[in-house]
Image (tube, rainbow, N blue to C red):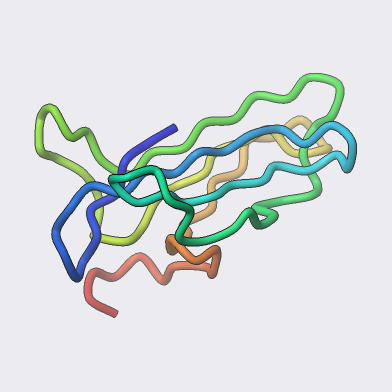
Length: 102
């Protein structure tokens, strides 16, 4: 789980990601500060390493008040070839071009 700053309200939303072993993919959902779902659940990737999966997500550290661009986060995971892959994503599940305010 990671937090992301909402670009509209500047509040902290949070992203929860999990390994859906029934369908062999990594899914995520985004929730607002009250715990209501805003986006998802949606599939982040379906080519992960199902025998030795490692994955993590990062958006911001709310304690240190530091993070990447608003409404964005990074997924890093081991793919089916055993290599580490990183994807930049928007809170709605679309790919992110790694530019703030774009």
